[in-house]
Image (spheres, rainbow, N blue to C red):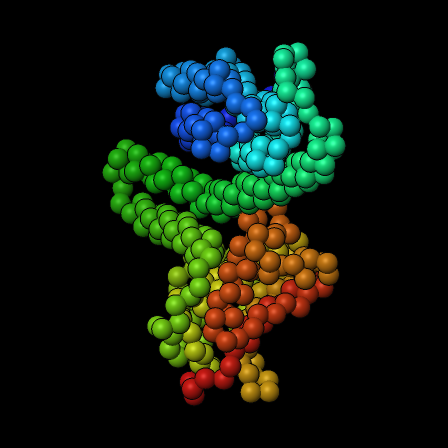
Length: 412
């Protein structure tokens, strides 16, 4: 238990602790209140003021220690484990047995199982329920007790098993969702680190060069280094712009709300493309491998800034594919087919495998190392909001082509 189940309890203890604080407050009021209800208002066959007082005392002890104990205190974690096991499965199971498996206490025990499932992860839910139930049965058998009708106990077994099994399944589904959300968060953090590492490294190197030039100028008294200082300043500025662009793109990509179409209007696709080349801090190598075919401009209904980010995302993917394959070029061209306009971004890099092409527009899916899987999902949402479509054609090892199809707009 120390190595496996309890270790999982300690790993998620910070979250469990916050839930226990709320549960302890409910328990402090619930244990005495329901003693009055089941003793005087709706009398049951059995009540135990001493057991309820014990549970209240355990909760008070836990709340007092909670004010001072750190999360990593092993003694406090053990106390928390004992508190949950005593106040939920042990108490409700014992009272269920003493009340001859009555319907009220069957429902109460299921509520206790529900509270426990909310408080802890799945393995400890199972372990606490098992330990608490066994302790309750042992206490029931070892102390003077009311006789229980075996048939009534057997009759409730399917309901208990159904509630217990359902709790396990729902808890597993919750933990699976949490685990995958954590993986997505890690992927997003990795994507941010990956995207920013290169421009920040470039800034550091350029500043080192700039510092060296300043020292040389101070020593020699020459003025020729001024031109080199200007060049370095320009490169630093491009690195900063690239880092800012990456952050802006990531922030846009991660948002999941619908786009406000009230501000949509007609825009020139050529103007958007020119804006991308002006804003996206391309390296000399990247400028060398881009080819833009001669084409006729067209207009689209939408938002120019959002479209700029779509084109930037597609270009970034193309550059990454070429860098991975260590070959290739990027080609951009416009076309018009059957009354629809299209802008195409084609690269001859590594291509995309057939099984991956069906998933590339899924949110959080990525077939690249360190990718967050947000860029293409964002692109598709934008183009869909413009009334268009984004499609991909590719052959592994040969090429990838993204086509942005848009309804025909006003004459450009």
